[in-house]
Length: 178
Image (cartoon, rainbow, N blue to C red; front, side):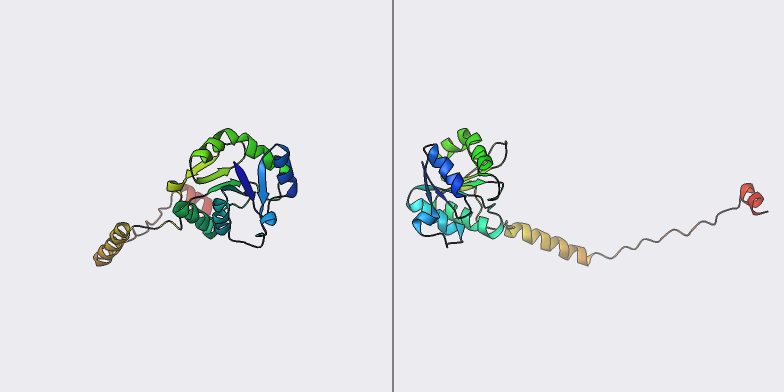
């Protein structure tokens, strides 16, 4: 398996992987370091049969673009949580600790692997990836609208507040007042 690292990957991390015998290429070596869209980088990695390694969290729109790219065209991505500022040794430890889980998965499937600390990595096959914001189906939306319309037609029920009960003076209150 060959790997492509993004711009946020430290040179020391790449060197440590190469020292272990891993075949690692960088976006700098390919002259595409200026590309900010990870979806484009995933497509590039796929054309060269590389696994894209990133420290980006791939959330919101960038994550949706990456997921859409993998789901529609294929590709393999490893996301190492902890950000690019973490010590390279820690990132390498996370990658190696999860190796028995993600390596066989990526050998068989296109998809995305999210590696956190000492937890099992999240393995998302191509079919399980979502390409965008969670949508509501039309049926669900229509049910919601129908309930809102029905609620508008119902008469408004107003509750009356109970009248305050006058407090009776006890013999303790009378004695305290004197």
